[in-house]
Length: 580
Image 1 (cartoon, one colour):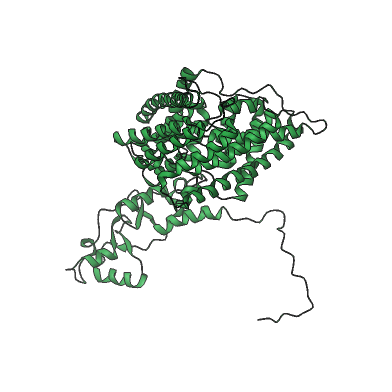
Image 2 (spheres, rainbow, N blue to C red):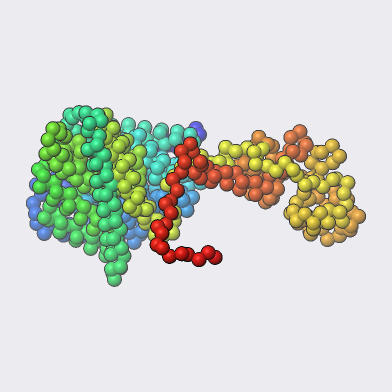
């Protein structure tokens, strides 16, 4: 644990530095390509001069991304599904080149106008750094997974200054584990990286929200309706992206050209609506603070959605979070303006935008707690917690009913990999052997001979028997394989000379998980359960499955105090039905 926490602190420092470099590299490329000057802060595209130069810059960036993708194919897309795949199927091993290729490709793609955020690439970059450290230092695959997640959390915390959301994101989308062993390093890494964010970018929230009050229960129904609408919006966003990705996969061209084709598409939209280009953090701030008119909100939402669909579907490297926030925030602000027309209602379009961001992000990614905490940390507006929670929960419910896959899992499902989405208590770790063992044990006495035991195998059909002496002490195990392996035994030979005397056993207080681990390590199917050298039971693989079946039984409905409604009988038609 100390080693993991120490490495997590180091990853937090490196992740914070990587975030600083990536954000400033994007700013430098953006100001050079579009404004022809050197600058280290992200510029606004609001007053960008419309010209064909936008298309030239974007297509050039797409060609460069295509070249990098030939060297490191993992950089295509936002990268979080690839990190999930590395955790689930590759023992959390990410190629070292990813730590260089992902930020470089993202900086080029976003710096040449790509409608992405920097959070996805820096999360993948941090994960690659953690994975690489876990490959250099001798650790287990499970510990390497924790280091990978620490890097991802460090990247998000350093970019947004949101350490709590970074930890929850790693738990919900990457680590698939909720334990002290995982949480302590994650918290250390995110804390250090968030401190780096304060050092480099300042201690304040990333977005400011105008003051507004929530009147409690009287306003919650309106935010509940907003949550339902955001769930439908998330489904549209995801399904539209999946459909356009499918179209790009069917194009009869080499994959190298796809980012350039996507760049041509979003650049043409950018010529018409320059606000749709780039990261768009300033546009998110304008939406939250109500500085855009209704018409501008609608145009921005549609243009950003279309350009982001085309760009991400083409395999260009970039993040999903900032575009989702801008699209859903504009959508929420539009509904907020509509709600203002309700007599007696006093709603802030900025409050609706904030809640819509959390609800849509949570529904699109199925990372509900991450979205709630993330938007709270971005604005530090505690008044928004109640509507954030309600709207996000309803949005996730709607999205789950209408579609099975999230924006993070669809690509993996297409590859045949199922991603776990629920966390349960492991019944094998909470059930003791004594609760599932067989107490009525068929045994063989130590003074038996081979012929007698061979008869027992033939009659009983068991594959092994414990061997006990006259005092009930277990002195060995005799299996069918032991009988077959002995080529020189005769019927009168003592069974003690054939049996295995080195007995692998468990105690009644051991967990079923301990018993299963011992079975797998020793390649046995039967474990005598022994207390003070005396046999009190036996644990088999069937008993292990019995523990699991008890967990399944807990999901079955039970008879309650109220009678269950029975389906109505079929209506009579006047025609008798013959009995069979």
